[in-house]
Image (tube, rainbow, N blue to C red; front, side, top):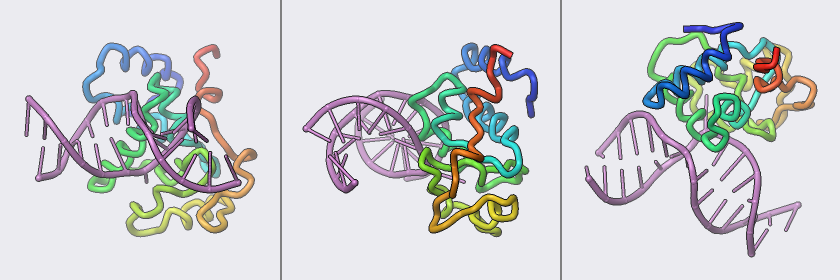
Length: 128
DNA sequence: AGTCTGACGGTAT
DNA sequence: AATACCGCCAGAC
């Protein structure tokens, strides 16, 4: 399920299969977010070729709630660095998960977002 | 089958 | 600066 250097393939997969692969693609990208870094729903959507489907990224992560997984969903925040998905976390709070990785969070908002922001559009650039 | 609802984001007002 | 609007589309009814 997880992909590393084959992300370009992911794009092709998306083009070929427009049914329900979107969630899987989201999970693949989320799995690649480095510890201590965060990205946004919109950035993931854009990387998957669905720039205007950021809401679906959140929806995809929401679907994780009822199943076991090892995805760092807490590393996905909105474009301003606000922990908008906080309410959906069970067990360890999203904020705490981030703190454990050294990410500073104050009042639901990530501090110094720019310095830890991880953009799949750059990190997983197809040009590389 | 039709409607509604979002872990969003951009564009307009 | 703040608010409003709406496209996106899979699922739940």
